[in-house]
Length: 254
Image 1 (cartoon, one colour):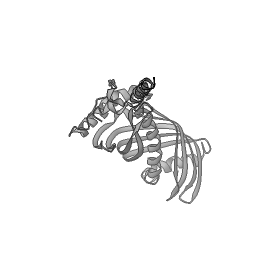
Image 2 (cartoon, one colour; image 1 turned 180 degrees about the horizontal axis):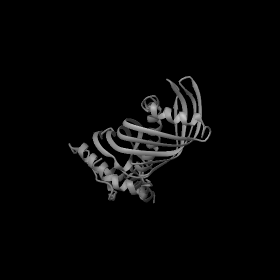
Image 3 (cartoon, one colour; image 1 turned 180 degrees about the vertical axis):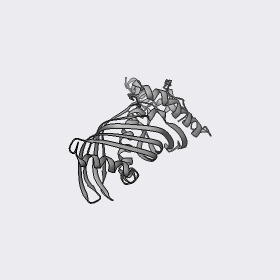
Image 4 (spheres, helix red, strand yellow; image 1 turned 135 degrees about the vertical axis):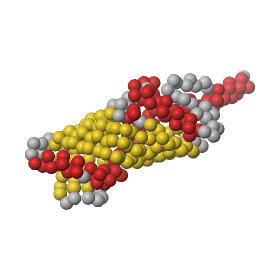
């Protein structure tokens, strides 16, 4: 009897400790798998990201990815405590259109360590939503709240992804983003606000004129805060999708 019990325990331990090698994963139509052993893996990943574009436009329900065009962001906070623009800006109910028109123009991947550098272009992005701003611009205190509209043209963006392998309770392996850094450059931009605090008076109109006349300077001052806020949002967004896609689905020889 003891031998039988020991045998059953050994079998159970083998089942529990079995990894994903014996598991068959179905590759969804929106994924073009790449192989770590492929010397042209950068080209493969570029093809994969561009292949995703129409699916991201419609949203991918099985991994809970909503449409990125328009992309909806419930809340985004930017804080800048240095320089001429020391402000805290809260944006909410944000809608961004134009994200699905991206073109990947650079990928450099270190798949062994799950690090990926991306370069991409967006011809035009239109953003609208609600905002609240408080702080100081130059030497003047500023408090503003209302609706905003912004247009960005010819956006060059870059992202650096630092990932790490992660196993769930069933021993299935995934990639999780540990760090994400984002940077961007704009050729043209235009802003418009409807300030409900100063609406209809000279302060509200002066703010619109100031935003558009000093757009480049404002973007330069706020860019570190914007990069950090956008990266924080997209890190959570991407991890929610990646943790539903086993590594074997998109990297079969991982």
